[in-house]
Image (cartoon, rainbow over all chains, first blue to last red):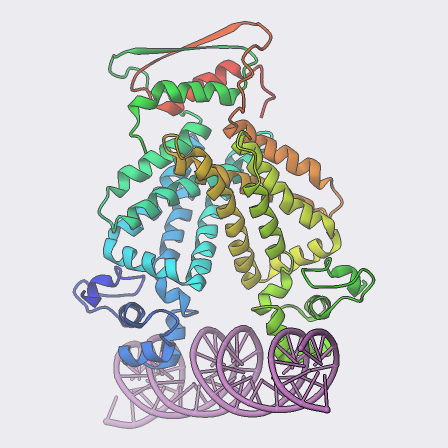
Length: 248
Length: 248
DNA sequence: TGCGGCAAGGGCACTCAGTTCCCTCCTCCC
DNA sequence: GGGAGGAGGGAACTGAGTGCCCTTGCCGCA
């Protein structure tokens, strides 16, 4: 496999259109080459800088830790998500908005499928990288929860609802993302995430403006006694719609 | 503050009823004394073992890493949770069951409020400990999700639903737990967690045996065209039931 | 042309977490 | 009594991460 194909797009460096990737990219490429060849823990930072032909001190200038070189683009993606949420229109449906924000993460993964799949295999095997990834996911989740808390603060249990929705959206997103990664990037990532997030949105969703006039078709009628628990009603609806949805 | 009060109950050591706490306890006590006095990062493992009067090598016999000494009882709690889920009756409501499993974690925290509050203040300040805690929480979540996956495997989107429910239950539990820790252990932890988990259960709950024959009342009928997004239907249901449910 | 920053990078030494190897001591059992 | 085995201790080592200072190359400026 080509090492350059494993390296993600350029970071925030100041690189002219056709310029060769700066040291940061070289370090990522060298690191992944060695990680895939000998394993993460068997590769020392000295090995990486030797292959990249730079000084050891420079590595830690670009990456605060050895783990960071495995996730070189999450910092940018997190900033994108924060900006996306900050730019939200005031009348946006909050749940839909955080689902869209989660899709930014998927987009980052999908931009470099090979790199993402390689990284996935790496993180699956190395406990330290899994722990690091958890802290990254946690920051995404806190970004979503922060936005939701602001939007739901006037509601009873607003903070609780915000935390729960953020966790559910992240879990749904990651479920689909991991499925896509396990398929070696061959499945349709967008559709899988749409389906998973649709699930979360169906549970928590709060419609912005109902897009009424859909195409005509059969009618499904649900009748329930007042007093019936909500979950039970929702379950009935899901059963009625079951043959519309793909079976997983 | 008394150091001994900060140490949690005995681990799995073989200690007679009245025996003095073994080395493991002494290490935890010494570590927390130093952590609270000088900070986590400012305290080296050598400092801890010097205060405890044991050899450095013994520290790593009892705790695989410096971080583990901060969470000395999670391993046991995780084992308890796994056993609890494995012992589940086949007809138990899965969502209720994982909520009860989550309460085991709360119980562990509530058994040593002082210790838990001290640890909470520590983890809030130290990024490394937060990351470690995330990996612990992740293991709890995977235990819940594993149980739910098995219980929901015959349902459409079973794995997705399992992951989302587990994440939501953990988030609800942690929301209440953190509120209790922020109150310095003065609030009613059990009530807060019951409330939070009740929320999750209301959203995802799945009846063991459908309590059909409720008291008769008005009927709500919802009609939707096939193809209407599920969230929209759910929203209609929620609107129709709004005056029945408590306004959260 | 020379000079004084200034930023990027490199080298070196240091701390500290975690591991490996081997030692001692105590206890129990034959 | 003597050997086995486990608990604990200690020295030395690896490797991540940091602090300090040096070189180099580039810029503006006198």
